[in-house]
Image (tube, rainbow over all chains, first blue to last red; front, top):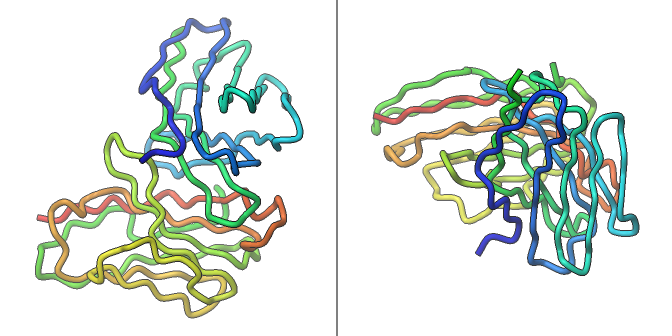
Length: 112
Length: 117
């Protein structure tokens, strides 16, 4: 049973517009969430994270929102750029008691 | 460049071959991980080493055998693999596997694309 779900396998967005990538989780013990970005032929790279004591974390064009009651988080990229085209993985942890659990990823294509 | 290197980048092997994947990290980390990425599946954790001790073995078949001689190096020894083992194998490292937040941020290598024929 998947504990971290990214239900959209792909997303296409126009350059300059907002990209919203979604992630749902089932384990209520998860308290730290991360987004990773992966280009072809490279390993995933850490992008941004959020602790369960917050509901928003912002870093430049990237903002992650956490809705604990809905067990849902989202990554907003604004404005989207062609270089943002990649696969984005959501990951979750329960205070390090178990290793990170990853979703299947969402492929984002930003069209110029 | 994440500070984690993996060799080889591509590997084709027959089902009776024995080969090894190598991972090296230059970040001073103490935890290292092997993941398997198959098409349309989440990243699957295989093994975790923390301070050279294996702390996780995620029900991985014995045809995969990890080795961690020191905190900077991690190997995955492969023998009598099956075609369904074809996948991208990713190595990652993190500061350690404690309750420190810094331990959650894993740095990944570029992966080894393995094809079993």
